[in-house]
Image 1 (spheres, one colour):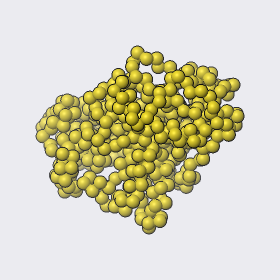
Image 2 (image 1 turned 90 degrees about the vertical axis):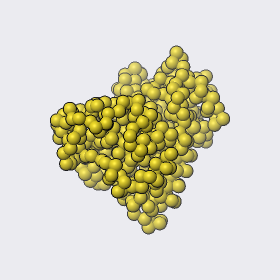
Image 3 (image 1 turned 30 degrees about the vertical axis):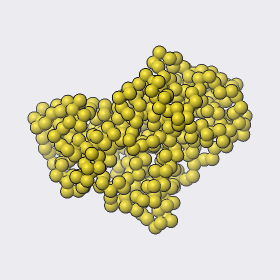
Image 4 (image 1 turned 120 degrees about the horizontal axis):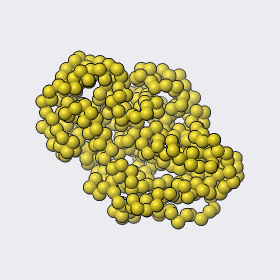
Length: 453
């Protein structure tokens, strides 16, 4: 647990019925350092562990897609925890008028709270304001990164600055996750606020919630740790060997498609990295390109979010990018689209429209084309600020891997974050530009458009 655990208040352990683990972001049992820490703490004090997982109707852009994905993981989590003697409460807050105190009601009977250390979205705000309201210890544990966020003392400038720092300590952290064993099983009653979830009930539960019902579940992704492991096995068997040469070719379907599961914590990056290294050794493959994305690029995004007060602001761009964008803020745009036109995939560009339709249908855009998607929103928006707001809105509403450190880092990359200056041009200045002609040279654009169509 070296470097993973932060005590966010100065309270001491109090007499209670259990150690409460609040599963905010890492919605899984396996390879969960926070759950393992809660179990160790419970064992030290002769207590059982109770896991609380909640889903409210009031988060920004709450909709059927996100609700369904989260709920699909609940039955498997409950089953796995029960086998380990760990209690589980899942609470679905259906209406905004319903009470929003489930966590505090459970914390009232706890000796300590353990939760997920996460640098963006609701968990960041909860971890800032909740600890002071409790009279028991509130621990935040980093189980989202392989090398803990706290290992780095400052914000890193780019991949080339964080890469050697990660590789120097990687062997220390890239090891099998701690086993979760409790000495005392949870035998208490299940609180009345618990919402039973079965696969058959999910559509009914979603329909009963006061959320946006116009965004349907993904046509491609089903939630849960079992689905995540199924996709990991498919990637290892079918795609790892061609990842280096084909991952930037969307029509080849050579990527892992694990980003929604990593975002919701239904699979651990540690699980993925260990499985990839093991399979690559057995099959004599070189997994460096994939591990670069998982170990360097992803953790660079977490580093950015950890040391940034507003990770969704253009103020976070390097000086050169802010300077050049200011210089070109008033440049004439050949095409200007409204947010509604972008949302409806109503531009003149068939490739861009296909990327947006993929977001609308699947809840995810292929990573290489997502860069093109973002660059064109910059080119076709009235201002750079409008472009940023449009990208964040579309991710927040439709993407299963949105509201994530990678979301904000990748969006701001389109404006120059973690990049370098390029040739100067209209609207972009010296920020990297991407063209349809370049996409046609490097990828099979027509195959992608046909597939999404």
